[in-house]
Length: 608
Image (tube, rainbow, N blue to C red):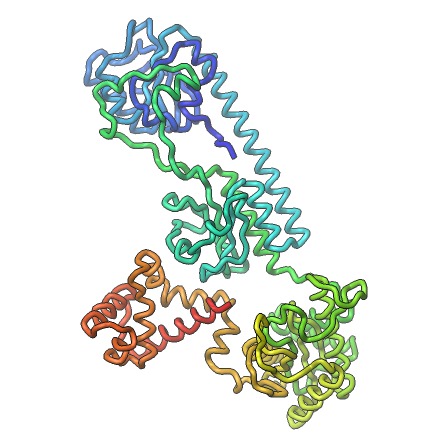
């Protein structure tokens, strides 16, 4: 994507300027400054009327006659951020600008150009302004295309991979979507080597520290924006802009080749002795900022959209289950709509149940599939949806066989949820046992855990998890969420349990099921972020391992030093450094407990 404003170098290449036989006498370091506007001036105090970014044209007739005045004139222009000064010879200066002016421009890094032939300034201003307007029009059109493209993606509910691909295509730059733990969720290398792009990503990402919600980090060359909705961020979108590395002018040969301008020595100003404000780091075009923000909005909206192709009744079941878990509808409305379906949820004992495959089930181990067209054995996304619909139907069949009533629907891409409505609490265990037995009969392939096979995601079969029973529809969401969390934590459990309940899941399982939760990732970053950032900058020290040894040994420093294969003095020094980095008291039980939980959570987040 091109810049909105041309540079001084590009202006010198324009035909109206070349006809004036331009010669650069000082300030070559500033040739890549952008020119926001062209201003003709014949008064010495013009700096007070400028706002920065202007290319000033003058014949010199109104400039000071003394050396001190000329130095002050150049200093004032540089102080307000003028892009360059062009002086036409023949009226005030016949053969060249004064050396004191050239020396001052060189010290301030201000491009100073002589026009050795008379040139109508109006031709120069027309050419530059036309270039600026044309570039702005191009920018406007590109921005309009960005808005249109991402509006279409939002309406279509595009998947994250498609959003990232479109962002990379529109920008021509690599784009990466990561979560709060710096794990890559999606990426498009834009033609670059993907392995090189993502190599050591977590450490590299932790060095990218933009100053704002959407900002450019010039040190790394990445434009970054946060991704989230409803006040909760869950990731970052990053775009690498190759223009972030500033390319200074390469001397007279470049100018002569591109625009015919000659380069003379920079007067008394030596390279490397620039006193004035230097050109700041290049920043991405505005349209790139708009692009990443629109892409982030599309991603956030897509995360909120629930697309479903089930029947109308099943969609209502899903809507009601979702409403109970997310509290998006009043409980009375949920009860009323359920009654309209023939389900009595009020004044009932309610139990949330979740059924899902064990492990990752990459090949659909938990049963044969039927795609939407009814063809068995198909693969891919349609086959996965078909298997999920099959499982939902099987769960509904098991409910009917066990003479149970309740809401049932797919909850996500892997799990089916059920809200059992029972007459009283005494019937809870009997009803769950009957449901599990009916599911086994309805699903012959439902089998107990078996040893993990090479390449499989975990033990085969299905897992049934139940939440705590509740006596009010207002608490039903809690029971469903508990069942969902228990099912997620138990999916790699090898025990042959007909029903998994909360007591069967320990802390590690709890953290595993919460590993994608932005609040848990935020907790890990708050507790360990400073140490992880330090290790990213000093990978050979690995202070995180030192902290892990200390906590795993129950804060026994001697035993931890032995476990870490370090001398006690070296180990103590490392602990002191960790304490300073984290600003934490490692002798505090509460502090160490919090850090230990954060370490376990980090392990769960990093686990495949």
